[in-house]
Amino acid sequence: MSKQPKVLLAHPGIQHAPRLAEQLERQGVLARFWTGWAKAGVGTGKRQVAIPSEKLRTRPWVEWMALVMNRAGLPGERVWHARNAIFQKMIPDSEIRSVDVVVGFDTASWILAERAKACGKRFILEQSIGHPGSRAAELKKIGCSREVWPEAFQARLGMVASAERKEHELADRIVVASSFARRTLVEQGVPEAKVKVLPYGVSEEFLAQGRKKKERVPGSPLRFLCLGHLSARKGLRQLLEAWSGLGHGKGELVLMGGGEQGEWRSLAGAGVIFRGPGSRAEVLAEMARCDVLVFPSLFEGFGLDI
Image (cartoon, rainbow, N blue to C red):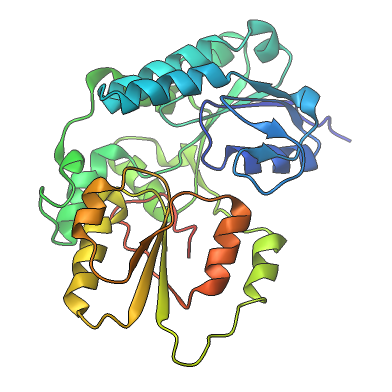
């Protein structure tokens, strides 16, 4: 019987890293999960991760520092790049040497990848979204102009683009969740043989909740739900403009996710409800209350909401 590999997983933020850590633990291969801010144990919070506490290493001050700087108005791309660099340097060499495989996430692993390769370890990159270099071309395909999502037409900060290239070059394998994400990587020069499509899934918890859909009260408004960060990339402007154009006032549009609400509130018409971010339990409860899911995203790695 072949020996099970030992895996070090690292992510300075959140995304789906806690869920990946849980699955690696379930398979008996997780050695350590390094992240910014999380709590070990069973629970429904986004930062709750069901792994033994001795396998979790957190550096919350790195995350908090970045959040404060971002809210103070400092350039976001520079702030998150700096956070990612600091976080990667805080993982001791001994941790890398003690495992067989290192798994990191896009834009947050270029230093970690170098260190893993220097120690003779395999490095796997989790690419959570399509290649940024393909954003503008993809938007043009669907008839979107620069005004729709200005960031998509802007060149990446040089040091960020360089870090992404290094991650792609050093990775033994790049894992994406969709054929779309794979295609954008290949378009930007990443060898196709490196890229593996591994779609995300949903837990039994979500499937069970779907079977508990609350019955609509006769005469109550039809409820629409949009999940995700409040941003131009998520297609929020198009959604709110379309909603305002309906003009019937007989439905409700629930927006559930983090991000600044000011700009979007100014575009919101009657019946738009801002829920803010929520735990997994709160997301499940909101899904059970709503009738229709809307997914207007302009550029993604995977349509997990669907």
